Length: 85
Image (cartoon, rainbow, N blue to C red):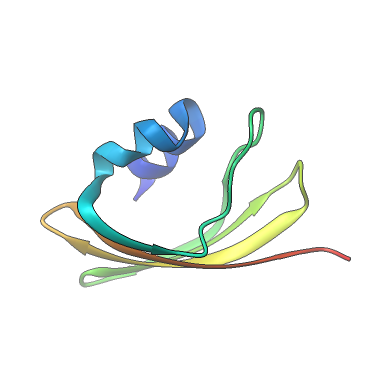
């Protein structure tokens, strides 16, 4: 997960694809714009699952992603996000 986050922050979605299965199921993932970084607030892993609580300071967006990993690749990413009022 940490490699995926670093790839996302340094090279964007295209760089992060290297850590995702070709048939990865993605729901609700936020768009991360130029100059924005996904910052980890909390990360928990157990078995083939990972939960990531994150924020993007520039846009004041925060959220929670649930991942499923298989053979070292992300096969599912379910994202829930909110912005501060």
